[in-house]
Length: 95
Image (cartoon, rainbow, N blue to C red; front, top):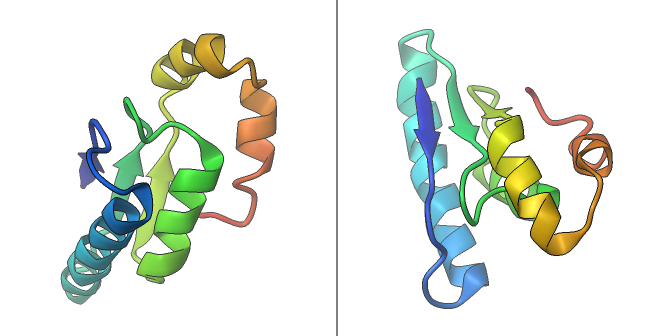
């Protein structure tokens, strides 16, 4: 199953906490059904530190990352960071 975020509105750390808590709960339900949930990189959720933090806090083997190169590259133009650096900093995260 694929899920994705949009705009981060409010305090980023609080948003990350809410998203991680929701994904943790979703991961538990998914695991009971033999399903993997993947968060897709999208809009404000395209940088490795944010996505890595969400997956770390959610802490479920039934969650992973779907790296949408299109959205990542659009963001790259704004933050001038190589997509290969983004990918490398998520190593160890199930993709």
